Length: 270
Image 1 (cartoon, helix red, strand yellow):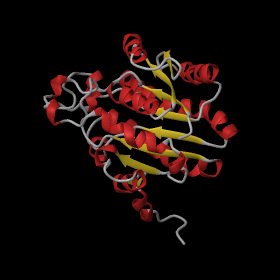
Image 2 (cartoon, rainbow, N blue to C red; image 1 turned 180 degrees about the vertical axis):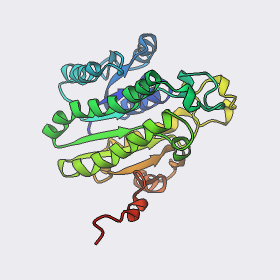
Image 3 (cartoon, one colour; image 1 turned 45 degrees about the horizontal axis):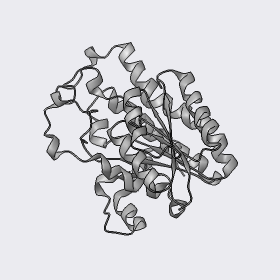
């Protein structure tokens, strides 16, 4: 496998660290971004120094997005992959928010803006900053972590941000197809055993998905074999590791967004 340089956000968290370790084990180099300095230090201690570079900042600050890409390129001299994994969830507002859903009265402008700044604006700014390097290489990968449709339809403001990121992913996939840059969505497929979900949610952790399931599809999407795979949402929980990667991808994937609903349009139908 060709070694690539990948910027992973939220890299020190449960899913992020699983993806980071899988990429490094596959021979790639990772610029690992996170806001948690201690967690980044732990990740660095577990990784080869020549394959991991850590970046700490707050992606809620627009300037930090450009800076993260600049630091990754300054260190590795190139950048071919971006995995937008960082995000905040409902438990950042109240610990039991997955169980007792946030009502519209509980969501003020500050909460709304923070969710969109981190979950929507940051992936856009990061992709915008990374694209010149991918276009120069005539090869690139953007992988966005959204969520299950059920969550999009139940939980605000988290679900609304992930719906937006899903839409953005579909549009980018079409826009960048001729540039050799693929855009795909990768989700676990359900609650995953990470600190992202508070214990106050009351869900049994032994029943949750394991973060490690995200590794294999992320590595596959970063491979030459996946050059033609774009505009797909892959559910890691459906990835069958007993199959060849291309077959596992087909079994776990469907088109990004809701393409079957485009037939609802009336204007300019022909």
